[in-house]
Image 1 (cartoon, rainbow, N blue to C red):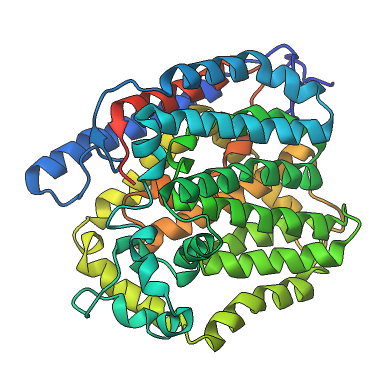
Image 2: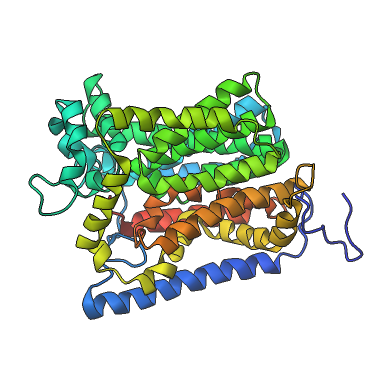
Length: 470
């Protein structure tokens, strides 16, 4: 591997696993900026919350309550963290590809379940989706699904008779219907719902690896694998419906990448599947329409719009079905905006959350990801130039292609942030976007076990010191 006259690797080159580490002061500076952002958001947030309570959170910038504790999952979480830090990079480099996918998924599930079980099965898993704010609290109102869908938007605004609880009102009915359908097939109750969210959400790491391999190369995906398995985001992936949403959205992008790069035997089926999952994603959460931005990034990287017609056909299936059933997505979204400003969204100050959200995201993706994002931003000008019209080749090196994919996800986050419809709780709400920031860690040099350990420490501290609510 070529170096410059000072022995440094080029900025757009991915270092191989185990190579000597070049100077990494800029990575430490980027991580320090992340620490400073979280610290400022905490101090300023506590001051605002004590002054007038307008943040509507007890432990800014996170939605949670200070609650230091140990629990049944603590030994398991520590063991999983040690094993991934010690053996993750080596296994990621050596395992056959399919074995790597299964191993990463298993590791992510072990990490997420162990963190959730710090509060025990009942509190940490079974009860999370059964509280008065959650989806399972309204299952009995869906005895006639057609009638409920036709009147769904009528119960979003506070003050209407029988208005929906917060999470049901805040999402299209696809989210609640998932748990209704689970109940109908005999998998009802909080335990099954929690396991569903964790397992489907955990599969997102496989989808991200498949996408990375298709759009960058296999070594890049392998370098990212341990960080995806040990992400601090697992604190919120555990028994959060947003983890489930992240899984669906991630597979939509993975299928799109396979179709666009034609690295599957059935690219047409993959394109249809990508559209179908994207359409369903939009009926799980209104804000996930922004997953179109990473989707455009995938097509730009593949230098093709060939899958687009089939993607659009697939994407129309779910909207047409819900519309024919009587649910109007746009009408419901307008009602949601009213509901949002009736509640905490109308009280929480935009001026704080516009940057406080980013501090919450920093805690969810970890300082290693922040360091990786620093490298992505360094590569951004060249990566964007490679996307200029008229070029007929895939943009540059794997590092540049990775930078484009991460930048597309970052753009989606910034759009959500500026919208003002995401004020607080973004450590959970933005999970579908944040998963695509974590691969930036593949740009970090050397064996990177220190960075992995730092990721684990952030997750363990947050999970054991703060009870993160829903």
